[in-house]
Length: 108
Image (cartoon, rainbow, N blue to C red; front, side, top):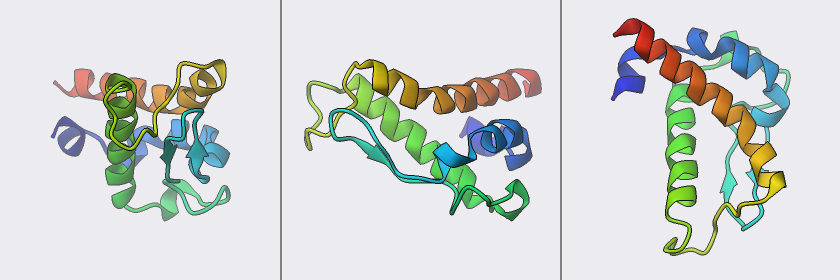
């Protein structure tokens, strides 16, 4: 709910622009968990994105969180294992989360 109320694409512009290659491909983690791209391709400009992009970001964040927190009980056995590769694959989403948190704190 906070994301819907406080976050606009322009708030995430820098993080999305700096990681367009990452956000325009399907990411597969060690453990079999995957997240779908939130951008069509790496040359998509931020201005071409729709507000559905925020929804996709939010869904990916929730899915990543669930995969990490419920590692032992995840039904599909598609998880994010604690590996260095996975740590590096999570970094662009950490930047997004940090910016989202900053924006919410500033707005409140």
